Length: 79
Image (cartoon, rainbow, N blue to C red; front, top):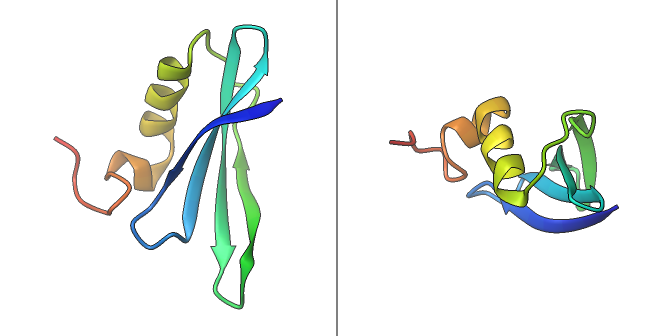
């Protein structure tokens, strides 16, 4: 499993990693940083069972699933 893309919010406190979990199989996980310990990422939601065939499909699935990505990484509404 390897990270092929990381999407962070505007504050750098939330992140979605797009993962290649096998040959042509992609998924994603959501993380957050704790303000008391900003040096580490903590797993919030593991969506790795929601697999798709491409990186772009994984980004689209994450954008539909993760609330702050629905709004856009900077918190603004997506058009």
